[in-house]
Amino acid sequence: MAGVRICAACAVALGGCTATNPVADPTTPKASPGHAGQLRTFYYECEDKSSMVVQYDPTVDEMVVFLPDKTVRLPHVRSGSGARYSNGEITYWNKGREALLQIGSVTTHCVENRRRSVIEDAKLRSVDYWATGNEPGWRLELDARNLRFITNYGQDRYSFVAPKPQVDRANRRTLYKSEGNGSTIMVQIDGKTCRDSMSGEGFESTVIVTLNDKTYHGCGLALH
Image 1 (cartoon, rainbow, N blue to C red):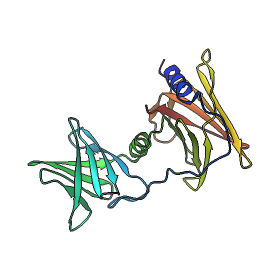
Image 2: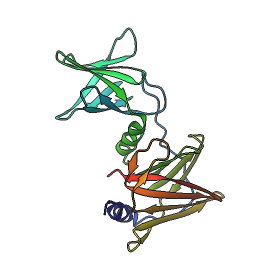
Image 3: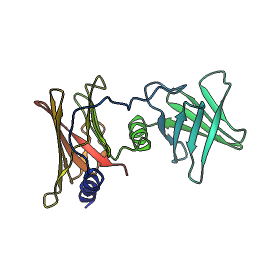
Image 4: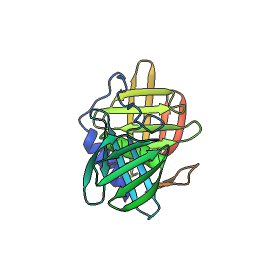
């Protein structure tokens, strides 16, 4: 039944939108200090079996750390290597895709899960539905205003105003269709489980994207 809820949620969220011409894609965040790539949000899996999400705030050069019982903002402090943020009691220190979280006298080693980082980054940018696929690598982001499709491993980007969904509850399916600037796109979301063809990770819905004359197959999930 998860797939039904996904489609229904997308339909409710986007019911008032109509398809128009593509608009500029505003979603590429700047790289944060100490990290490779374009993300500002990072998801870590830690040695004590816990997980941690952090987000870089470039406006004040601080790292926001989401802990199980609270959220803290850590200012940037000097470091011999990597990037270090600390308020004196809690310290986050990262180098590449590894990080240390120190709370008082307890230090925990963590390693970034890049796929989860991408998902958490989208979630904190208010993306409602996210999907991904392989060969070539692509991802889809859908929110109340925009439908974005990024393919060819991030090199090609298409952005449309979110179209009104066509919901087929009997078949647990939702369709989104739009066109503009010489491109057409159709997104089909089916309420059946899906497994990523490379990582083996499980998702709650199956996605087919047709951009112009090319079809992409992948998996997706609702973020809110």
